[in-house]
Amino acid sequence: MHSQANHPQLFSFEFYPPKSEEGAANLQVVHSKLAALKPDFFSVTFGAGGSTRDKTFQTVVEIQTKGIAAAPHLSCVASTKDNIRAILKDYRDEGISKIVALRGDLPSGMMSAGEFRYANELVEFIRQETGNYFQIHVAAYPEVHPQAVNGREDFKNFKRKVDAGANAAITQYFYNAESYFYFVDACEKNGIDIPIVPGIMPITQYSQLFRFSEMCGADIPRWLRKRLEDFGDDRSSIQAFGLDVVTNLCQRLLDNNAPGLHFYTMNQSAPTLAILENISL
Ligand code: FAD
Image (cartoon, rainbow, N blue to C red; front, side, top):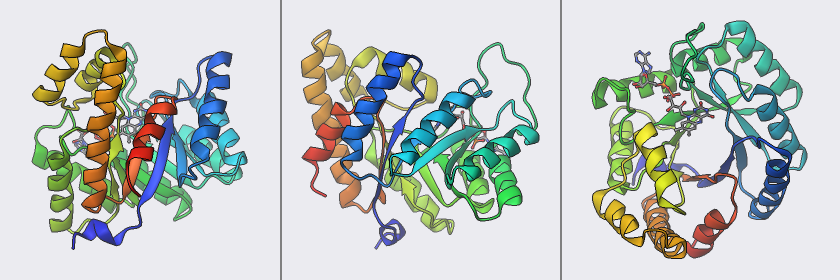
């Protein structure tokens, strides 16, 4: 039995903080539809450099108040220790106890690297400052982080975050299930037994997915890319095909003991709901 099988299967949904009133109204609807599924938590992204600091905070507190746990993402790049200390205090004061700890990517044009270089330093700092109060999730890259020197170094760097006190990891999205299986095998061989939850990106359109994947280093396998290209502007065929592909991916992951799924919802409920309706839980 794979060590990941020892963890319960947890489900979570990721949002970004809304940018407008219309976006906020949409998120309320999306949240209530997804909350009906009783996920273990919602998470809310954070703009590296602190650009969404207040909006992330506000969104997290609103979600938590409605009854299901909310986990803020917190990126440390371009931040000072005082800054992070203050953010942690604000969350603690609101009873928020889960956090997704990241390095983040410096927005172009922003120069200051701040007092943290890598996410393992953030995890270490959170533990130093707040002991075991926070349940810390970190990012994992089954297909290797795009800036990594090589796969081996990247894995060692992932282990640093676990050794610093991470409780769980959420992966970058992928469409090659094998990359995840090999990654969790490597974890097992290296004594890492925290849950490694697959990050799932529903497929709803091609050009945005392609752009995103180029930026974050997620591979769209050739067969999948070619099929999506063939659909051109035919949105409904892309969605039907995407639903089929991602449902199969999720089912395969769960059948092989993945400890749950984390959905990158892009603040939409329908694609995630459709996948979850299709898989037998
Ligand atoms: P790290 O773990 O620090 O790794 C970054 C790179 O540095 C890797 O190449 C690694 O191999 C290398 N490295 C790590 N530690 C060391 C070390 N000690 N010495 C030398 N090299 C090292 N971005 C946002 O801005 N906001 C978000 O809300 C957000 N949410 C995310 C959620 C998830 C689940 C995921 C998977 C990613 C998210 N990101 C977010 C993107 C993330 O910030 C980027 O992928 C970023 O480039 C790396 O962040 P990290 O925490 O994985 O960094």
